[in-house]
Length: 99
Image 1 (cartoon, rainbow, N blue to C red):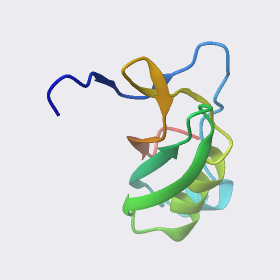
Image 2: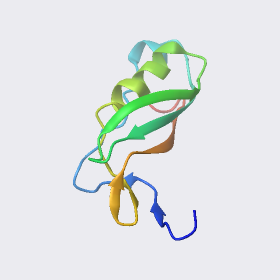
Image 3: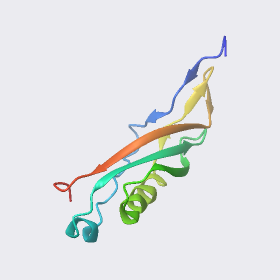
Image 4: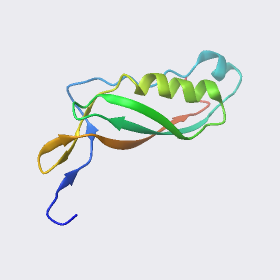
């Protein structure tokens, strides 16, 4: 759109977004993988929804990311300097060495 400057959402340094917790039972069972989500960010910077766009293959890992991301806050996206609802892709890697 010509004449419209859109700034994507991003991290908000005033909030501490806690990373997802690697579920203990998943770590013990050797479950690992990457979860890719799309975070819907409202004009107030709060996550208004989260969708899994690529599963790790382990529902417990996917759920850990969904549960964490629902409480996150961001700098909202902006259109011509006005906060707007937007979307932010995000990836979490659960590896065997991370617990």
